[in-house]
Image (tube, rainbow, N blue to C red):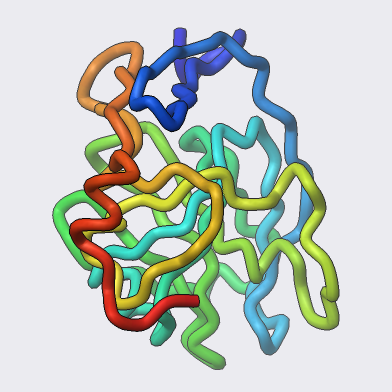
Length: 191
């Protein structure tokens, strides 16, 4: 099973566009997460399926940033340990509910009524004063890259939308943009 015990199928995309998949055991994450004022605290515990950079317009609007970095985990990985009454949510789409602190507005996490996943914001896991990102929490892909407002020049695979078809059980890998497709859709501004 994809979201139960056992491994999680991931896809690797090579420069020649050939896709291979491999069964891997996801790393476990156990960490406190808080908003910027500390009013809301979560306990996050579970396997990390992936860490991705999302370029969708909804994430950009919600965070006020060029993109959003999220840790993708199975549903049930987030438990509120402090400030439940200070956490509000709203649906930014039929697929995503976003939770944040009413006091400081700090983003905490997202869940999905259509996928058995939770998305935890990387900044909340790292906390104030963080100067490095642990290797197991470094992004491994870009999603919704077609909606980007700026090109990101790194070696990570870039997907038009999601990297997996989560409507399938188990989820099926989707192809990443090829180098030619990226070149054809390049933006004027790059990072």
